Image (cartoon, rainbow, N blue to C red; front, side, top):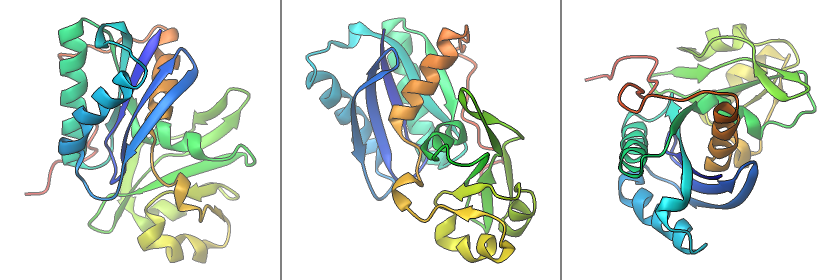
Length: 220
């Protein structure tokens, strides 16, 4: 089954193409929330580069959030239109579930931290298992100090919230800080892989009901 993955929750957007659990290609459009302009052309590009007509896509997977309000709306709307028009199933993948897949499995615990603006952080705790990272808490939005207080000792902490709050987490002195910014952002390849895993395990999202996960109302 060919899967199209769409990731628009952060400043770096991406699209990916996979066949079952094998990644075929991924395209990133970086630096600056330009997803509304870049998303559809890059979907066309990734399909045409493999001579794959849209009708051959068997599953559409999209980042659900949390993350950028505008980015999430663009990604979710595009995924819904694609899914509905081609009569293909849709799976929405929480952005933090995709982000944690960037973490090395060298540690027992991991906590991705995403900048939520207004001095807050999106996060979720994960624990290593034989099948990779397993969710070990709830998705949350909290001030950075409260987020740090809730993270397990020895956890691998990484994500773009470190750009502003690295000192907050380092002062705790009990985490491993992931300083490589190449792993700080969710990727469409992980949206594909996690979405296919959900689908294979029997999950099917209703395209008329599934919505972005904002974790808070929009600030006016």
